[in-house]
Image (cartoon, rainbow, N blue to C red; front, side):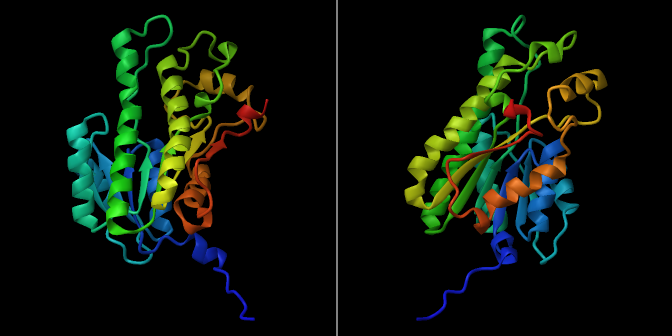
Length: 266
């Protein structure tokens, strides 16, 4: 009987020949995500509301196999911009295999001062994630190919924030919690229906990954709630992202991977 040859771990994580569209690819986490995908060999299409900013970020990405990265203008809160941006990404790269829904248009208002309109506005982020996922699914089916959709959730889509951790500071906005909880469940729902189309849908839920400009008092208070007693660094999300984007995760769909330093473990 012939011996089955398994792919090596290097082959499983290799994204050479794959094209990824990432929204918000110039931001704090998005920049690290974009770099990780490029480092694995993928062609990366970065989207931003500002086309020049997206192009500049794409030009800085590594290209170990000679992939040609580029940027497109795309506002995931505007359906016309979503359609135009996705079409531009396909036109510029020839195909899209992997979608990373990372962009966020946030609000800062919370329980006491969040208006109806602000709360509703925040949920447009969820609608944008869905519309882009549907476009990727339709594009992949048309090509008779396989695809992967990765949504960005949050630990705050799974648990409430500790009131004492935010004492004297602005609390984590309720509209954000609702959006991220919806994103996590949307990954499950889309995965169940898109599996027949050979499209995997998963979610990554980061814990606290604050940029350097964030209030240091808040960072100290948040650290008391973490078993690891420290904040996350953007590159510590690359592993989960590459697992879900690559053939290493070919049998993973409908899942939410939480990377939170142990926050949700107690």
